Image (cartoon, rainbow, N blue to C red):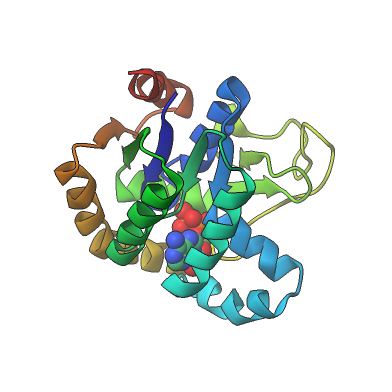
Length: 216
Ligand code: ADP
């Protein structure tokens, strides 16, 4: 089973696909966005530093994100992982390559989830997440609505919207993504590691193609 680097615009379905892969194959899910949100929730100095940057939909500095990532990769050493939200810039991709060399990690694929801006925006604006267990639901998509409004099907805790899931922040994040992603895609294409998956579908459908790629 290959390690996965997910490259995708905001709300392309990375989170949902990751959840499915963790359940089915036991991957470790490394999400830099989640790690940063945890730092904010814990009220740490680092959390306070990144809070307003994230709320505006801007990128946190490479230095901060790389330090968090290195710590995490050390922690899960030897296990297969999904990288979600990293790399987001070319320097981050280059740094990741160095980390992989240092750790002897060569079994990986970069998966690009290709989604239209319109669909990604609908997903983003309706997304609701469990405040306790992190399960993702959706306000408008029938197949992903919680059974009881505002309540998690799994654990009964409250469902909340992310503070950056608003139209203005979404557009900014999408724009930032477009301007940074081309270089990253080219980087993995040149290394012959890039796979493109159509993500304008239900996650259950995209996952079938993803499974082929990781078991290849
Ligand atoms: P989304 O996929 O919806 O953009 P993420 O959870 O991946 O959500 O990221 C949320 C925010 O966290 C980003 O808008 C950015 O501010 C910050 N962030 C996450 N990963 C990185 C990264 N690799 N580099 C810089 N900032 C990051």
